[in-house]
Length: 443
Ligand SMILES: [Zn+2]
Image (cartoon, rainbow, N blue to C red; front, top):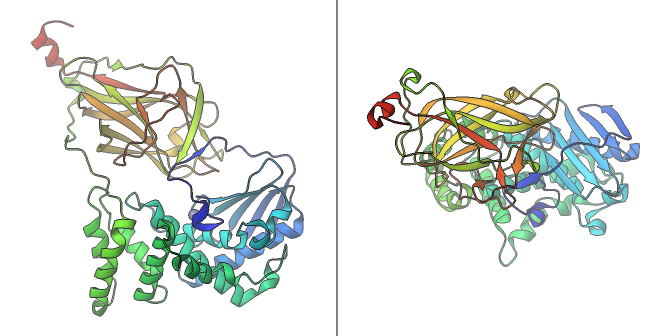
């Protein structure tokens, strides 16, 4: 997420990406050591300064033990239509938009901390490339990490390269590093991201040098259950550490967990499947939309969820979900997965199925049918698609405004966030057991 100016500009958990298509008008490509820059209307010296900063920050992260990409891709859009924004795909690319090259001047003149921001975004990369499954982690914890470690890296970059690195407007950027976090922590009531950054700083000091990448690897290996994350996370934290530090780490966990961890409680409704041969052969498709999209959205930090009711009393099994959608991004789909989740009416997950991104056709949105094992649904149930998109790669799901009030933009297990604009174009296929016919003698 955008983090170029630290916690002050952190606006919401859910960032809606309306358009991820780049203007390709004056696209310049600059191939440098460890960084490739794709820029529109940016003077080459500025492109080189951004690349040199990213390369310097990348080298610090590597020295700290993080798994960093060999090559980072930086996309820069520069022009009056581009508000100041910085983001990452969490893997190997960073995207910056600025209104003009003047926006790269020091923060005292612009209010934007670009050099720190680049270091911050690579902090996300350092975490996310290792800790891939992190549904349990709150936004303050994720942003607080990038804020803390970004500051550390700013300091180290300065120690190695000095003021001259930032050629757009050389200045003593040590004020943007850990010194800035110290000032923010000293404030009367620091916000959640600042508090989280302070907690990461405490943990880093407790664990000792270069232990954070190992902790992220241990959390990833722990296969944390989002419904009950605390035990596994604490066990993984303690397992790789010096036993003498156990009391201090337990005390740290007690103070950090309420801010860092968001359990995603599972439904009480237990998943049950059935032999498809026992089901009526032709499923019923629920079609609440008018088949005419009125918009489309890709949601980072959220999901596309719609609630349905079974068409008649009795047992119904989910057979498939149709979604009106189109993939955007590179021609070749990323080697990642999306989730299809069956939830109860309160958005608590019953079961999740993983599917490859390449299942969703690229380009023009169209109906796509995703099969599921025949799975019993409650009378009222929610179907959720979680794509975890970035600005460069994701899926647009179509929106229908002929109805509203049945859809959410929140991921499974999270507090339901109703969608005001309409309903997602999702259609479940349901089947009843054949025995239902025999028992009712009709229908
Ligand atoms: Zn961030």
